Length: 179
Image 1 (cartoon, rainbow, N blue to C red):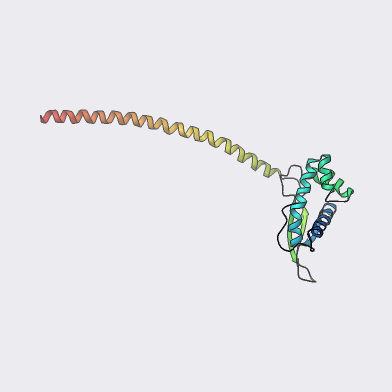
Image 2: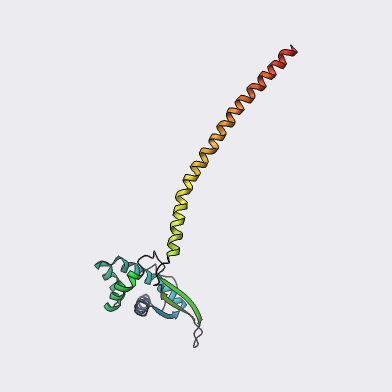
């Protein structure tokens, strides 16, 4: 689990908070979307994303680590066989929190936390490839740009060396005429 929070916890003690978050994670993986308070949703997100990352690894050790939090074997099986392959291309951000109106009874701010199961859009993949290609092409363009001004500088240096030579000869001729 992530770093424990300071101050008041969900439910009371730290053990009760772990149980609440484990139950919320179980329900999230079972139903793919749950409605809860904003505070619980924000606390659930890092735990759920970490469990999904374990599920993406898919080995026995990862399964046993997930089973320490999610006690229902059927939900763990669903997590490893359905949810993990659906988010295999994703680097993170497996959950989405959407704020909704306050709860009627106690006016608590409510939110919907759901799994992001839609595939990564090909447009984003194309944009990533284009940025990589641009980054590769940029050093080549800089090298070519560096070479071109260097050639111009050399020609201007040659012209500059020729020009003062003419000026000095003209100056020496003028000095010679005066003498």
